[in-house]
Image (cartoon, rainbow, N blue to C red):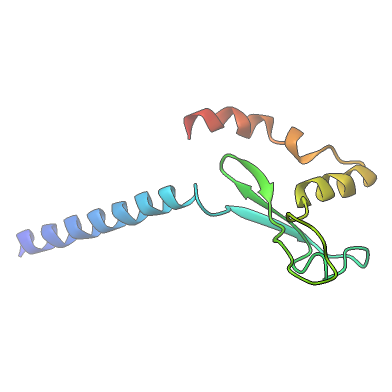
Length: 110
């Protein structure tokens, strides 16, 4: 009886450990947070998801996708990080790249 309970506990611990390792590996490939801003001056034709940025473990990245329409003549997706920095400037915030000095210090351990 005791041996069976011990084996069950071992399998549970091993399973939870594998799940946690998989989740830690996954955070390098998917955003851990994202922000999207919609406003009348950012029409859905150009910004279907709004001004969107993705926060990853190793930085902040563009969340805008390429829009394929006949009236849009862009070769690459719009830079939403730059757009968000511009919006932040008008409300008195610093650029996104200057944020998180403490968190950037821990980046070397990740």
